[in-house]
Image 1 (cartoon, rainbow, N blue to C red):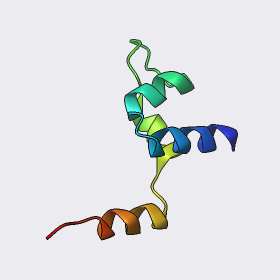
Image 2 (image 1 turned 45 degrees about the vertical axis):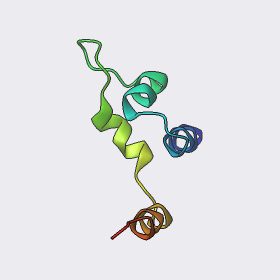
Image 3 (image 1 turned 90 degrees about the horizontal axis):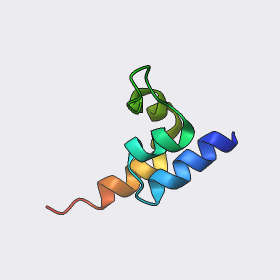
Length: 58
């Protein structure tokens, strides 16, 4: 739970998923960040999606 909370807080504060992957130790065998693994930790909530939609400017 702590890893999910930390990752979500980082993404909410504008940290890139590449940086979060590195912080969490999500790396491939070749040493590059494994952002697919990290994506599980930073899925947007319904509230996040609603805020995004409300921020659209037409």
